[in-house]
Image (cartoon, rainbow, N blue to C red):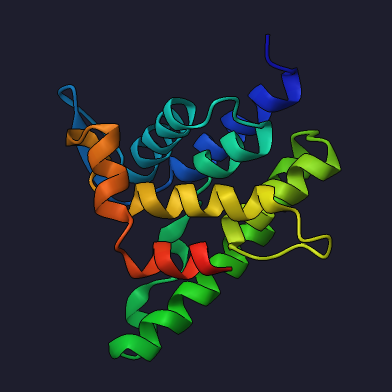
Length: 169
């Protein structure tokens, strides 16, 4: 049985992502893209992590929390513009998730860990949990998880730049 704060947090994340202007058709129904994405990420974390923590599950659910809020077109073209956009997204998503989880009654340590994972940040005590979770989300997001086996997800993600950078930390 999941704690009530966890259920409230999942509902709040889904509600925040339900405003996504992009829709995808899944099982014949049009749904907000980021809601579908967050459900898929959560499902993959459950499949890949032996015993996922609440912070890992919440971070997976909020991996692209309100991603449309900061438009890519508002940043310069090219790699440096893309990286600046990504940094702005990570900071905003981490801050937004922390606030959302606080309002849902999430324990402060879980909210902080989930926000660190989403923001791809580090924590003062250098706990490996957020880094491992970030690597897992990065690997999942860099491949099309829908149509691949678990083995192919890991095989395809291993060479990715994102994976290599996270792994070396």
